[in-house]
Image (tube, rainbow, N blue to C red; front, side, top):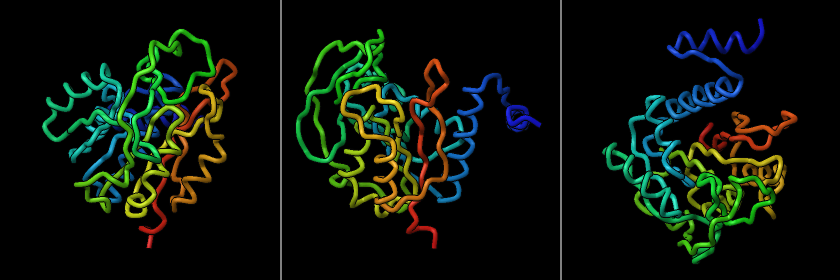
Length: 237
């Protein structure tokens, strides 16, 4: 039986209708994420690069009822994120970015808000047009307080800036059971870390990959980027 049909059957058992390959990939990611959150008894999710709150909504959709702490530096996206968080009751939002040093840094605010990045674009699509450069506050994850790291899941999606976020959180990540980072195979920003180096960084931090899920593809169906979900090998016993 084709994998797509297997996924469709699993989806129907969960009350979902899987209508496309892209949706099937998202479904497999969400199913795996739920399993890992439950397995490691995660109580807090740090959502770094939250944009307008889509990942937080995903967490609630798959049944996560714990604390969500979202971070988004761009004001327009942050305002929409804040509205979702306030309506939730167990979700908070902070208008900062993370990196490998504490500083104020210029971010490229793109026409497509989910594409805003510290890195300049390498593509010329409409969504990748730079609307303005704007200063934002950058902190190190190691400086963040008030989290039970041993029961935390850290998700990073910062449009090419993920390796810097991870370097700035190396201390607390030693205690974090689960990590998700975006790994880009085809560079859409200038100066992006190669995907092999990004995976090496995740490995060097002590994490083993449990899943690589395609986020998008180009017109030739080549994967542009993956969501990489990884478990801290220190918690495996």
